[in-house]
Image 1 (cartoon, rainbow, N blue to C red):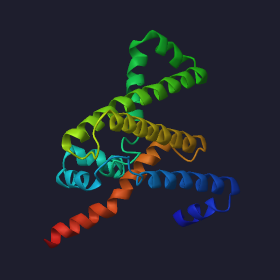
Image 2: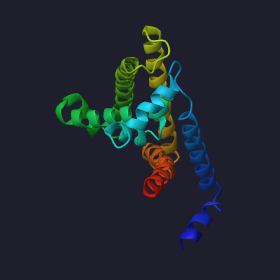
Image 3: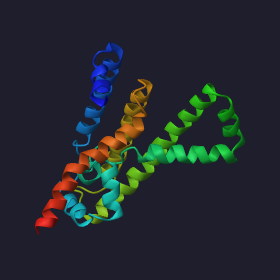
Length: 204
């Protein structure tokens, strides 16, 4: 029955088109994970993450699909968007204006979504700056200074905004929640490495 259901996807042109579109965007996301942020000493950064396995830093790296250990353009992942969404949801209970928007239906929800996007960009800027300063202190930056910090903030913020856009495009195609799919793909991408590390530890 399962095989028949999956097979039927390719018999429905519209559904097939949506699935191919979604898969294409997820592939674009995985390609972006391997595009490094300029100015990083990749060898020094890899050593830091090698020591950070099993820590909270390693967990964040897993949710970013390995983008954080490479400090790729998608290093922040989708976490700023999720954080902004949670903050907006909490504020709708305490801020009268947001509470009214929530009750206005689709139009109000569009406005809240817009605020969430602004919040995502703001959080990305703050986190991007924090990461750039932290990397300088850890000695993983080739040429430290404000040029590097500004470039890193712009790069990471643009990366998160692009992931957010990818997620929204997938959601609009009604294949599933785009943000959840991006997180899922990022975690799944780390599974082969985790299995290989497990076997290596067992053999040791």
